[in-house]
Length: 133
Length: 377
Image 1: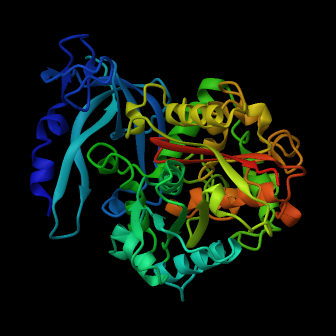
Image 2 (image 1 turned 180 degrees about the vertical axis):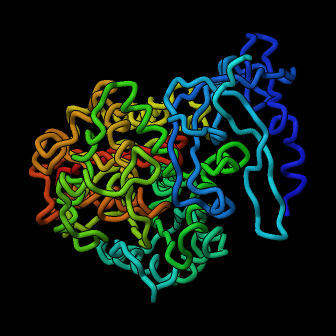
Image 3 (image 1 turned 135 degrees about the vertical axis):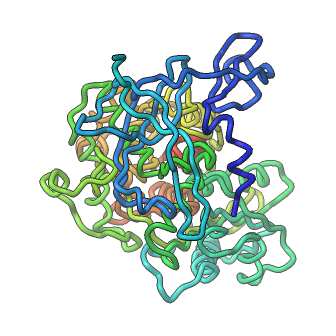
């Protein structure tokens, strides 16, 4: 069991909380405390909007341990509106074919399961942006 | 080098020993003062750490210095770099580098999960991302960004397989046609099965020595490590400022070429990272053999074949020789040495004098490049 390992990431996993560099304003996700752009310390938290677009994607059929039940699943590089890129599964795709450039938004979903008595890990996935009613 | 394959009857230490003994015999029985081991998956798949001791002890080398190096698929290059530093420093006269990988004791999902540990566990593997999926992401973006046809990388696979036919150490000694490539089933699309190298067991070893201690060993042509480098970028693919740029590969190639005092035009052959065919294109671009978005145009016999402009995968590469994780960098290095020594048989690149080997860890997070040159007798 690795409960604490996942628990301590809850802010970023469930709420997409990253950081902003106080020196150069670079937005940082996942949080890493040192700005990758200017090298200064960056510990100011920053709430990302959860919106972005598909930069690339692929579908995994032969899944690694913990993801067998989910296969086949589509995993993507998502370029967030605020700049950074992250890796996430796409979900709730319906019949819509995925395309590079497709607008997407963050949702919270189950990421993996470690067997019947094991832990369930939840976190961010992305779905096609819902049109405002 | 051992043949790459499914060695059901051979253990991690036995595979390494086979390669160590072959290298020592080839070097006239030299006894190394230090052993540098390269391995990626033994902790996950064999429940074994402390490989430096394991391999030195099993090879009858108690008392020497030994340690192990892990940098995912770049482990072999990183260990070779350490051995080079040791010998160049003058503190070690004779170093043994051995790379070994034993993957067939486990199968399927657990091997995929072990391979995925080379990425960012908290932000990549937790999303179900594997090295194959990373290659799929890179290839789709590459095809999209540069308007490249979906079968444009076929030539890397076809050429590698053609070269493996004559390599007794190769796992897949069969030719593959363009038609077979086009009809192959897909996983991690747009990748198909011929874009992915088969993961298998293997070990490769080299002996490095200071020129001064090699008094009367003229029975083999000597090869110099003329350039040696390791460079790193971001661990996660999504954190690379330019995901198709392989910044670490570019930097490590630049340093190794500069040390050797040569340019890409001087390189007679290039053993590159082709665990997935997209990396062959990206490595050729990053290392200065093709412009950005143009590496795929080299994917044909006339350019990368044994008599082409820049031969790659001359013994089959990871694609057809077989991918051996932490040992791959040392298969590459050993193959370049055989080419420069003129001992490559049917795989010989005519007149090879200067060769380069480059291995990548993760999606280009670590890159190690070595340039080898012939030593004038």
